[in-house]
Length: 141
Image 1 (cartoon, rainbow, N blue to C red):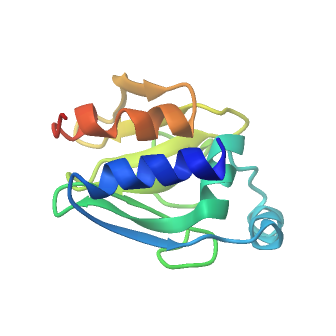
Image 2 (tube, rainbow, N blue to C red; image 1 turned 135 degrees about the vertical axis):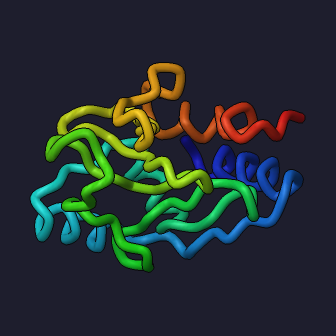
Image 3 (cartoon, rainbow, N blue to C red; image 1 turned 45 degrees about the vertical axis):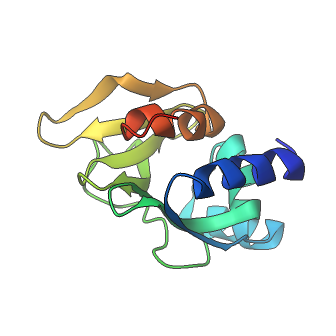
């Protein structure tokens, strides 16, 4: 995704509600975070982190994404996940975590009440997740 595409996405988001986009991380910060935490982040999420290192979208009932340099920081040991092979990178306002499985590009929403990944909320990559936020949050256009 190019800077222009990010800009269009952010513009589209801003039309729908209050957003807090945190300044992007640097490639060095992302690489150091991965090394320090023995985590390889999904490639599309890393692209997003270069643009926005965390933030909150569609406030008040939206989603919070975590960063590598700005708080809240991605916690590779967050217990709100199916098992240790998953890493939580954000949370919906409902409290359900947004996560990925180590070694995979897919993004999942974990229903912590049922203790299962929500099959309807499984995305091929982080951009597919972002594209679906309107429907996911019931905002519509």
